[in-house]
Image (cartoon, rainbow, N blue to C red):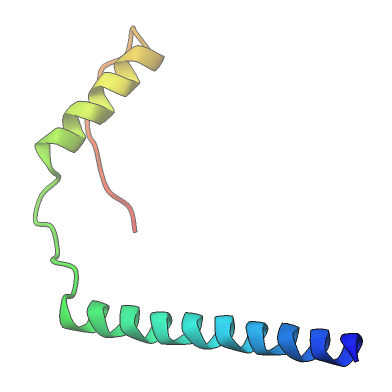
Length: 71
């Protein structure tokens, strides 16, 4: 009596979790479709400052000439 019940409970739990993850994935896909990412025309000045400060800390004698975003 114990073994089949445990197997059924495990299968039901697995199915429930898989179903919830599927629903969440569909919700995320819908939100991404409704609110697409805006294309940045230039690099954010805060990002430039952070990259410059980090590079200066890592390489003190260097100078940042250009920062590019690669995709």
